[in-house]
Image (cartoon, rainbow, N blue to C red; front, side, top):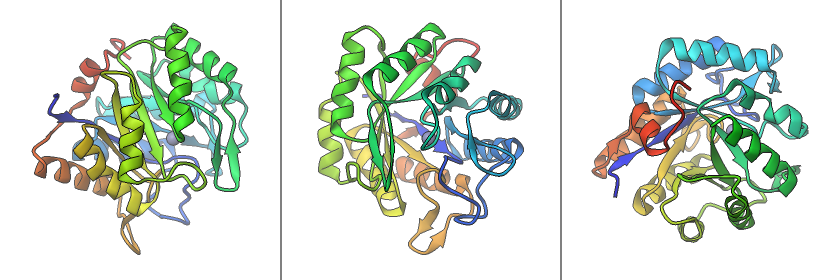
Length: 275
Ligand code: ZN
């Protein structure tokens, strides 16, 4: 088994605000600084959402372009843009950042309840996203919030819309979707295609930390960052995204794993050259 573990940092997300955690990076400059600090702390992948001038989630190309350029000027972290966007966005809006040809992009594998709201991902939407990513050689992270999403991903693979090596994002503990529990994670992992890479994404402080240990035990990769969790411990806000990356890296190293660098991820997931 590959001894290297990949840490993804989701620095901003769509739901977190500065009122939740004042250290949330919002502008392209803040996002690039946070990505750089996370990279220095051990993150190999940046999961990227951007915000407009009012701090609201946007899929606007100009903002993504600026953020990507600023990050690339500072470090070689692999950039994974979101196509989940935010609740209420159209599929066309959500897909836009893929046209900038990032190395990776998230691809939500099904409709999901999101607290009181919901994100719609029908099979035709998923096929369109997968086709666009394949045409542009963008590696999808197949995000699964519920078990049915894993089986939906099998349909995309069977139809030839997603090719190996596969990378899954198992998003657990979104309120009203699948909960994070070790046996739930283990069951999801058992249903992935042979040889698939996967990253556990526990939502909320406790689930996020538990998922780090769960992913290490089951051979997966880690995701931390303010999109998923704003706390370092119960009642204590994380000082920065990098602080969460540092802890994840420390835990992985204590478990005898090496921390993957961006070029390791490029090799593992066979990412397009000069992404
Ligand atoms: Zn996201």
